[in-house]
Picture 1 (tube, helix red, strand yellow):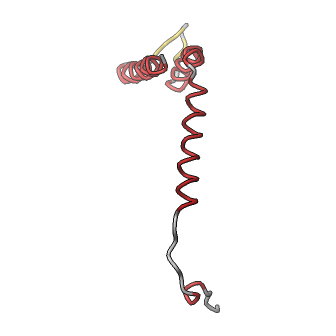
Picture 2 (picture 1 turned 90 degrees about the vertical axis):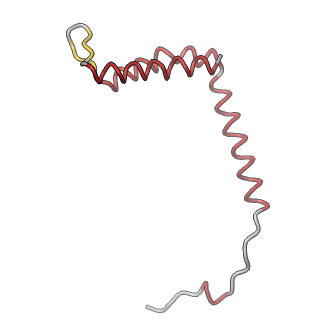
Length: 91
């Protein structure tokens, strides 16, 4: 369901993009900027993302990323560096 919600959202954004290339969007006699159009598309699609569980998917991705990066950093071996390379030059 999340993939369907994402596909509909990005499809709507693409249609808005194509529409702004052709002509300006006018609503109730006022021109609507592309930023406001995208914000409206995001606001309309937010309940669908909520129902699809997008929040939990984001936290799963963040958690898995932290585990992979943390385990890589824990097991990463660095090269031995001589002390001469780490000394600062006098100014």
